[in-house]
View 1 (cartoon, one colour):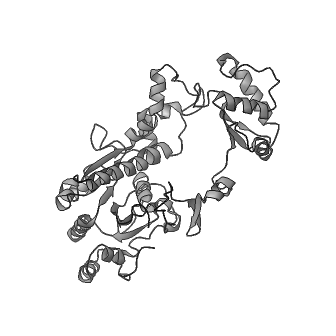
View 2 (tube, rainbow, N blue to C red):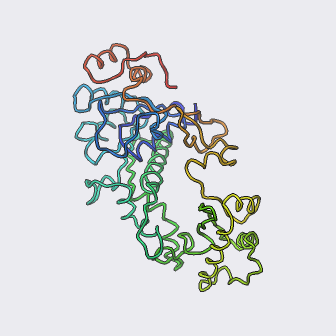
View 3 (tube, rainbow, N blue to C red):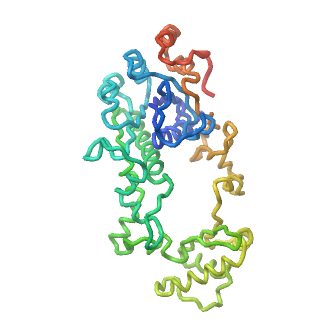
Length: 392
């Protein structure tokens, strides 16, 4: 069920952006088999406590193969022959050394979309170097603009490199390449690099720089907290309200709701008056609780919203009305998005354990019982569960 129903995706175990990009495809209905190592790597990425809370691993099934073994590589190639998409997130050259690189894969399956997720890209002087989200966005230029005035750059969680500039870029590229195949084109490699995806997320900033409307120092611009009417303010109970009153009509509503219309404040775009404006906003917001300010701004177009914690957000009326958050395996998490009117996405299944339903997945992808039994007998770690059991 879903807009990508019938699309087969073969994912090789990784962390961060690759699984997130694959999650997006699985949420849209793609049939995903993940090839896991027989045992988890001991020091790879943040640690979780099992598949139940592996949110980005949801919606797929797992087969465990030791790709160092010839029989396992042969099984992986057989899976590649049946796949529409392959996604891997190893360092450049790793899949080639395993005999599973693009040349071998496309020779077996000329229509395959071969998605590659790395930080630096497949080429260039840094291609072989290790890194994480913060390193990639540092070199993209984006990190330099995030943080307080006069302070150090602040990591924006790992949303800009891993997920926005990584997994989403990968999913977009894969879908574009799939569309090309469906139009009669050939398969190809999708080289998604987080350093480039992060730079793309900052495209508007390069435009502002070229127009002379962006200063390189932090917290000195419209979108980085430099203006008093695009920032967050502490309330009397220690919470925060986010203000985004950019346009003059929304700014007027902000001033009115704060009770500052008669305060003789400087004009909105009088940069010299911004310190006075900020001080007035700080004092006003500090005079009431977050709940009280929410009541004040209810129904207004002043572009003010409470800053909700991760545990609070799912309970907001907007999310509840749309069902934006779902419960999977007892874990509250964001639901599939975007919404499709004719082919809605189903509630995803929790992430699989290693090898869980592996035999059933292989059966669904065209392996016969003898081939599956052969893999099990070779000790390749394929779970020998009921071959007729389908993905939930």
